[in-house]
Image 1 (cartoon, helix red, strand yellow):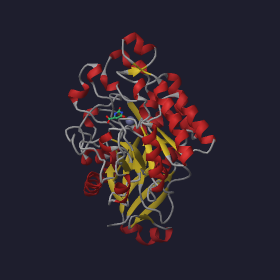
Image 2: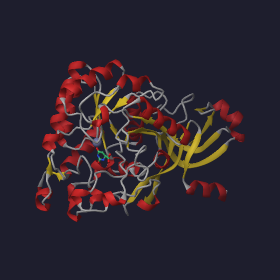
Image 3: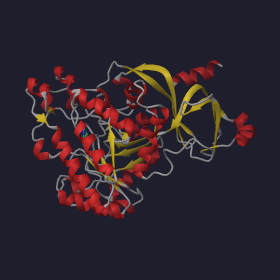
Image 4: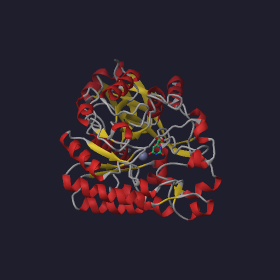
Length: 436
Ligand code: DOR
Ligand code: ZN
């Protein structure tokens, strides 16, 4: 592979632009740059910010089973275009990824596509039924090397099963990612329990259904000294519980989705199911609290919960629609809009919440690394001044269910690099190179 020269880029958006040479998949030294710079392929950075490639702990790739909505290939393409170099593929496929055969299939298909590292998440319980632990050890020891387990889409609601799962995961050096939703409190739930749901006549999904499970699981994780990860935190109260649990030394981490950082249940008045998601969109007070919690580290990272759905499952009446929205290609823009433009995070902070922390939580040693000589070249180039308009039909996903349709987003991914190989390149750069 030819060396790759990133010309005029600013690591973490700091300092003057520099030239960065990538050779044999790693960031090369100044010496190498002098020696091999001339015979390298060039990407003109034009002052673009370079960050470690993003890592998404929560992606629904829908393969196997729902290839009509997304495949490992289309989802990988969306991920690369969104600046991601690694994604964790959720287990709620059909069949469920609750055994070594399925997780190995997902991992190997991901490798074949080769656009992003695809790490399968293993189910916690057989068939996501919440009744019997899946064979976590077999999945961990399989070629897929599973280190994150989750029944996402559903909550591991039985406290005894959750405790056992935490105990096993500890011995496997893995983490249990919990979709926190007490099912007895969300029977028939359609929207955040509050004013909007009452006015629209939709059954409420109370904040307590999330908070009570997070509190319970933090207590269990502390008791067995295991690692818990809380998926898609959506309420002020959950952030409070996390703060408390972290203060007493619980090994808990948490993620927030881009959509919960910007959208509120005011969106519901149109009855457009593109806004239906689980957990539901909450209130402006929650949005503000989540931004604050992400800024101060109470919430560790951003994860997309990228959830493609078929037209017939979204373009229907609210109660029949499936919950979920696309996220991979819009995540950075939403983070820039809500966290960078507001002064809550600088670019180092973006690297922390979109790359470093998620890589650490999942135990990846080759992602979320510092931009330094000898480190693997898993990188993303971001033009902070570019804006673009979201068009669901143009996104790489098979499905088009984005709630950000028509929105102008700041910050564009101009290139994504996986172990020194360019996996996404924005037309703009290609044009510039041709123009020169
Ligand atoms: O909105 C959601 N969609 N939340 C989940 O937990 C699951 C996901 C899906 O699989 O569509
Ligand atoms: Zn979930």
